[in-house]
Length: 490
Ligand code: ADQ
Image (cartoon, rainbow, N blue to C red):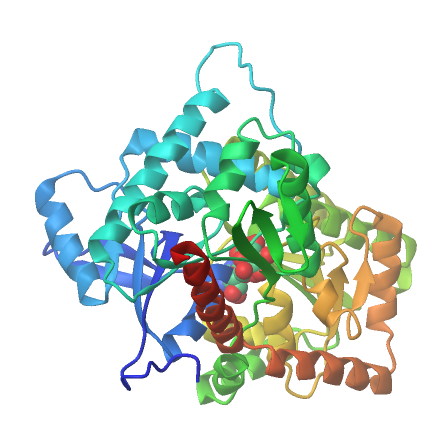
C-alpha cells in the first residue's frame, strides 16, 4: 500500500500535533507512567500507525520545570517515539488557552472574536499572537531535531498554522502536509482575524492542505483568493508559479476497535447490567467533550421541551449525557459547566420522581469498554453540535450497535452530516422545537426504517476508516510533493 517504500521498509512519518497522544503521571518512586489520552484527533491517527513508522512531536500537556524531570520524562516518552515540546506556564496561557482556544477555535466554529481591548490591558490578542508565534517556533525546532531526509511530516490542526512555513524555510524539500480537524469557516468570518494573512501564508507553505469536507476546503481557497489575492484552481491555490494542493479528506474511525470490544465477555456483562437497570425505558445518549460548540445546553432544552409537551413519554425515556470537562482554564468552559449543571438540575427537579430522574449526567472520561456498552444499549443518540469538524462520536455509536439499530439524531452543522446524512435524522440545533420533534420521531421509528438507516450508516463507516483516511492523505501528499519538487527545482 501507500505505506511501503521501495526499499521494503516502511516510511517514517512524523506526526506533529499540539498534544502528544498520552498523558504522563509520576509514581511515588519518581518514575513516569503514560496513559493514552482521549480525543478525536488521536483516535483518527491511530489508524496511521498500522502502515507507517510513526514518531510524534507534541506538548506533553503538563508543566515540567526541572532539567532532571525533563530528562526522565523525555526518556520515558522517547521509548515510545514521542518527542516532547516543553512550553512554560505563561506561554501555555497565552498560546494554548489564549490564541488557540479563545481565538482560533472560536472563530473556526463561527463564534465571533472577543473585543481586542481589555480594560485592564492584559492578555490582549496581540500578546496571544506573539506567544502563538513563539510556540510554533518551538515545535519547528523539535521537528527539525527529529527529522531525517525522506521523512513525511504531517502537521495537525489550528495550533500549528505557522509551522509549515517555518519548516519549509529551513528544509525547502521537506515532504509536508497539514490537516485541519475543525471546520474552516466562510471567508466572511475568517477575514475578521487580525492576523489573517500571516496565518494563511503559514499554512500555504505545505505541499498539501487537507480538510474534513469539501465546503471547508472551498472556504479556505476563497479566503486565500479574497485576502491574499491568489488564484484559486480546482486543485487548490496558486501563487505565481508555486502551488498548494487543497483537498477534502473526511476522517473515520477503526470500526473493529468497537466491534471487537463488543465481543469481550466483560462488555457483554456490562450491557446486561445496563439493560436491567434501564429496563422498560428508552435510552437516549449524548457523549461530548464539555465544549460550547457541542451544543449541550440546546440538547437539554430540546429534551425539556419534549418532556413538557409530550407527557405520555415522561416515564418512558431517559437521557444519559456524558460530558468530559476539557480546557478547564478557559473562562467560557467554566461558565458552560455551571450552565449545564443548572439546566440538568432544573429538568430533573421538574420531571423526576422519588425513584428516578430523566437525565443522568456524568462529567467524566470513560474507557472504551464502558463507552461501548453504553452505545450498545442506546436507542437514540443525540449529537447536536452547533459546529463540529466531523464528530467521531456519531461514527462510534453506529459501529457499536449490535442488534438494536439505534437511531442517530445529528446536527446538520457537524461534518458527519455530509457522510451520515442518509442514515441519520438531521436537525438544526438552534431550533429547539424541531429537535424535540426529531426526538419523538427517532423514539417511534418503525423497525424496518431503523434497520435500513443503520445499514446506510454502517456501510459508510466500514468503507471510510481512519486507516483509509491516513493512507489517502499520505498518498496524495506523496504525489503532490513530486510535482512541487519538479516545479521548485525547475
Ligand atoms: P473532538 O471535538 O474531540 O475532535 P469527536 O470527533 O467527537 O470530537 O471525538 C471525540 C473523541 O473523544 C471520541 O473518540 C470519543 O469517544 C471520545 N470521548 C468523548 N467523550 C468521552 C468520554 N467522556 N469518555 C471517553 N471518551 C470520550 C476534533 C473535532 C471533531 C473531529 C475530530 C477528529 O472537533 O469535529 O471529528 O477532532 O478530526
